[in-house]
Amino acid sequence: MNINKAKRTRMEQALREAYHRQFLPSPGAVWYQTVMEQVRRESLAGSIPFLPAELVAWRFAWAAAAAAILIAICGFATMPTDAQIVWDLHHLASPYEWSLAMGE
Amino acid sequence: MRLIRIEGMLNHLREGSVGIAPLCSAECDLDIITRVLGGDGEAFDILLRRHGDHVFKIVARRVRAEDVESVAQEVFVAAFRCLRTYGGKHPFENWLARIARRRCCDYWRCQERRVPTATGPLEVDQRAWLEQVSSGLSVEAFERECERKEAVEVMQAAMSKLDAEDRALIESIYFEDVPLREVAATFGWSLAKVKVRAYRVRNRLHRVIERMVESEAAT
Image 1 (cartoon, each protein chain N blue to C red):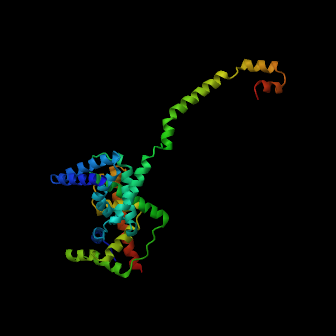
Image 2: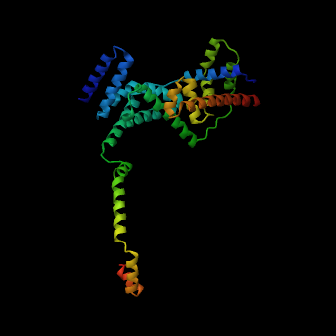
Image 3: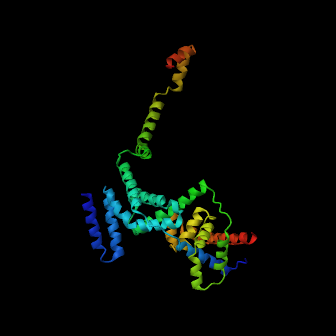
């Protein structure tokens, strides 16, 4: 079949008409009940006061960041200086004693 | 108690619907939505009964007959879940229609993943129908032809050769005359993207029709 523009337009028009003339069922009473049951279940699930995981994570993100900064500052404050390490190495002769002094 | 409350609400709606119908309907929908959001989940039943038929029809046109109920149900459950996001700028019916169109598109996306669409060649009756409608018929004859069951079969065969988004665009823009802005809002696309895609999709549909006709000519 040779398809020119007019034929193609007519076919497209026919498909459009067919689309509108499809048999459309109506929802039955059972369907309404099923949907409402599902909605009730959703509504119950929504009333449980559990926070979603992401919400908890975001809510405590600033606290986690502050704690990380605090730990880092404490770590730097308690870290021995180079001079202390050299002194330790000189005065605690054996590596065994040195490691004991470092608490390992 | 709950029934009395719903009955009272229905009476209120009936009284309200006497005046300017569309505006009042929008207001009443908003009232009900406020109630639902306030914790009266049962009030959602009124919205469901009011708009159920409309949503059901949108879905029934777009998905397979056996899946209409479940997809329409998903639409209402999704609407209930995101009811807080309804701004009230547009009628509630339009908002629901958007959700329905998106759900139908998702449905076909899932179908594509599950079963690749493979439709066989057209049957003799369907082929005859295509030839008939493409020849210059009178308006009455054309309408008569469009009422035949082959019309829907060929239409479904042609649509099955398009992917989910293309199908959704053809249905919305060319079959249902949904405004481009509405389509853009439905799929979260820009207006320019919708225009470009609509043009391409129409060409794709033409190619599909041509291929269907050519394959028939070859057999």
